Amino acid sequence: MTRVPRLLVLLGLSLAVLAPATADWVVLKDRRKFAGNVKELDGAVEVTASDGAVRRFARTDVDRVLESPRDLVRESERACDQALALFQEGGKAADLLERNRVLRTAVERLESALGVLERYREIFPEEQFAYLDTAYRRVVKDLKLCRERMVTEGGAGEGGAVAEALPTGKSRDELLADLQAEDAAVRRLAALALGAKREEKALPDLVRRLRAETDAALRAAVCEVLGRAPAAPVVTTFAAELAPDAKPGATFREDACTVLGRVATAEAFDLLARLALDPASGVRPGAVAALRGRRALAARRVAPLLNQAETAPRRVALDLLVEVGGPEAAQALVPLLALPDELADRREEAADGLLKLKGAAVPALVDALLDVSLRDSAHRLLRAITHQEFAAGEVIQWQQWVEEHRAELLR
Image (cartoon, rainbow, N blue to C red):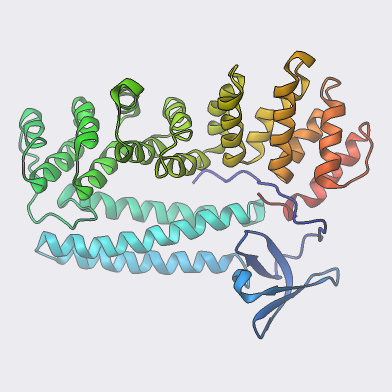
């Protein structure tokens, strides 16, 4: 896993000093974290910080109490050990249906562990918690092993595993013909076999099959194959099939978000940025989630949409950039503070977006103090976000303040 960038957000008006690494941690459901001496009370959790400050939270607001983030590593290791045992058990099963049932259980446990590590690495982005990255990489490796065994030896999907061996002995043309078969199981086997054989020339056909397919299990299998395939033909075909005049259905657009998020190229993110503006209720969340997976790339691809002449689509793009979030979004917005008076509406929109980003905008705004064309606007926003009284020219003080509180702030 690429190390998650430091994400910043103000934790109310009160900031504590960084607690020692040995302190307990309380993590709230809104992703704020507090270190100190933790005491479990009736219906509440109390944290006494190293500076003596005492905070009390309702138990319903608390996500976890940790002795250390290393607790998460131990949890992931247990999940990997359980998945390994299931992997070995599945390997002994003569029946492919049973094998894939066992492997599916292993995959589900690993996916759950992966989700926890992803979430908490964003909550604990500091370098001292880099061991979470190591744990993440182990889970990814084991997850890939289990998924590949399912795809190459039996196929899988939410509708259940297939009971026959993959028809990898068939030619590409034969498998493409099978993609059009009336029997959904035959279509699923053909899609998985094309993926196992790495038939790059068949990828456009798989994208088109995804668009036409009604079987949920087959769509899941095709998404898995396309997400691991060479990016260029996949993205090119999706671009054509997602064109407005092609009139793609909402289900296909949702599946496109899944695949393009896994492909994660600049061109794929251009399509995701469009899908994130999609009015269909099931499409936008998937697109935004995929964009958040690579915030820096997402910000670069969404930022040009802020230059649209029409106000309504420009503000939709601004809302999307804020929703993607992170310091990268702020870096895309800060230069707009220097726009001339004839573009004052865009300048004000950028300022509004930076205010919504809150703490995530602070490092970029502090850097902007060094630019005379940005200084006054950046200073006003910094004071509004941080409630600090440093002057615009006191750049060193601003920089020191950010460094002192960096570990306390999250997005």
